[in-house]
Length: 104
Image 1: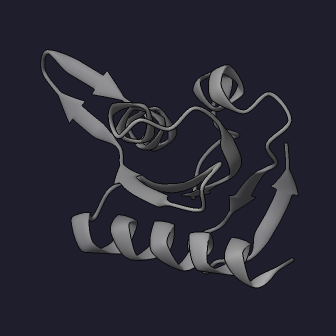
Image 2 (image 1 turned 180 degrees about the vertical axis):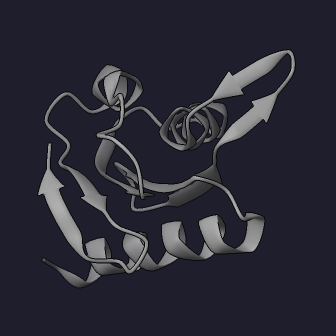
């Protein structure tokens, strides 16, 4: 794993911990900018952390993704939003301790 991917893991873990959310995510766009997010669970809106991170990237003008990370204690995440912007981008799935369990 490279240093940039380790940075994404740290950012996703920090976001998750700060908000007490079930998931934290971070994505890196084609220019190297990073976006972090957590799960949104409102009565009228539910989004995964990855969906929010991808939406933030798109809203900031990103045209592609290089990599994504989701930190979760649950099941494998839905990565369809990542695939929309980064068809080949690796998606690292890590546990709350930051250990990568799988790459999708």
